[in-house]
Image (cartoon, rainbow, N blue to C red; front, side):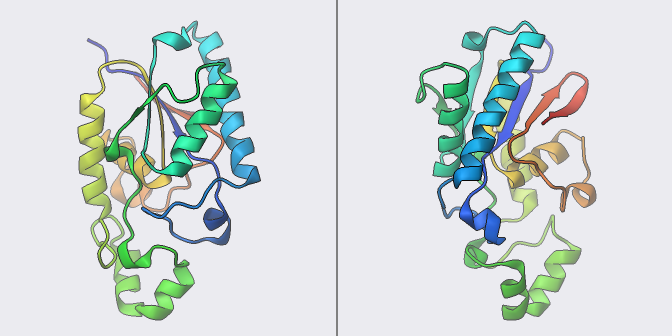
Length: 199
């Protein structure tokens, strides 16, 4: 049986994204640009479904439980003319937890704990912030999520979970993925031929 196709969308921009603040489990709402990005992702998805002759009603839809992801999913589904709230939630798709660093900028974290900040910059995949998660832990839960997917699926989640999924599937290495920009307003398609991005 072929592996399922994953249409992966990162949530739209929030005020914290714009300010360079780490969100993790915290939840700033989408800003105006973020709402436009979510709608754009929905339009890109609609075009992909036409191109690939996919019936949108036969796909599974799942979101991270965090509000910014659910808001994005609602806007994506509105563009697809689907009922807004008719999708699943999966806690494994939540963003990487930044613990005590949540709400801080990189500069603030560096000033507060320069030694740990420097260590994490060198070993970003394995070093976790105080009270937070490592990317290795996120990779484990994203692998668990992927292994549970049985049908082609539209997933809305986060930048950190996208990087972890890319490493789990062998598309990126921990070194290449650690600082990889995950675009908002784009659709990443994980399929038989690897990964393609549409923006």
